[in-house]
Length: 241
Image (tube, rainbow, N blue to C red):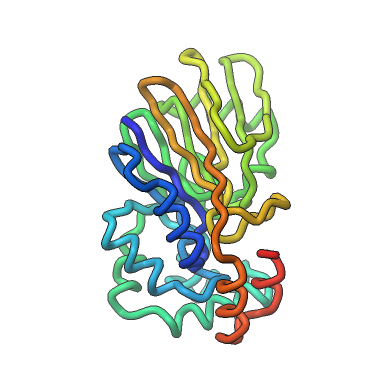
């Protein structure tokens, strides 16, 4: 099975279109999203429409959770809360219904998908887990690989049954070992925070155990202008530059 893994689109329609154009005619068995499809960016409704049109499966992100559960809003900083309030006004009832259907995790073959941390946390960050906890989580995980997002930065945890190693992930091809388990942070399509403003996504082939990180240029200036025109916090724009 070969899948394209997207994460943290954050309402960035230009970035999502750039990623899908880059994917082009590449043969994949599916496209999946690790959540936070909305929030921060100016095109939440268009992003949700594209997910529906393309049949892109998504799990629940913390920004979707913030839209669904007002009691959870206190978890966010003030600018993120303001962004969610604007996002909610831009979403149709149909898109909200689709968001309500998102699950906290999903399994495709030997692959687990979750926004924050396995087995199903939408809020726990990759960097909050130490090596001892990774051993426990990976020993309990029946899947050989888990994809997460949430931090907006690419990274990989590798576990051989004894030792845990954390590696950075750069653009390009990576080979994985058949006798190991992995947690892959897929970065961000729409709000990267790794010093590289290009949109990031991952192609995963579980038969060849190959992982390709794709880094895609897109029209950042248009996204920035839209963010400011709609009254989103300026930090949402400045983080893209």
